[in-house]
Image 1 (tube, helix red, strand yellow):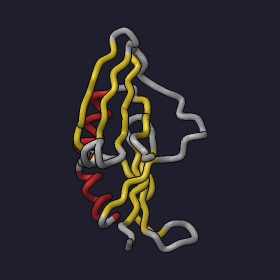
Image 2 (cartoon, rainbow, N blue to C red; image 1 turned 120 degrees about the horizontal axis):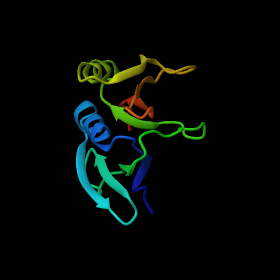
Image 3 (cartoon, rainbow, N blue to C red; image 1 turned 90 degrees about the vertical axis):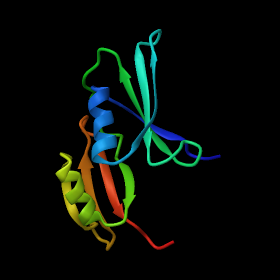
Length: 129
């Protein structure tokens, strides 16, 4: 078994694709309309779906906002340099909601970014493997 994707809902698919591709540097892997279901799916990621876990953005036609609730936490992306990633994301119009620095009660460098629909994305510094 392997993890394939995480699905999040988008109130404006073009805006979300722009954020994930132009602000976070992902690639739009595929997109398809489902007229009978009145929704569109777009898959974005840092590599092919065959080798990477990706994000499925789902736009339900006519729905422009969602209540995120309190059950969902965040997505996480590993980056080489969290401080530089924050600078780059900010320069491309991204919203940093927690500046880069050590995590609470730890030493791992993290930061948080918010996507256009309010989903939080944690940036985590590369770890030794």
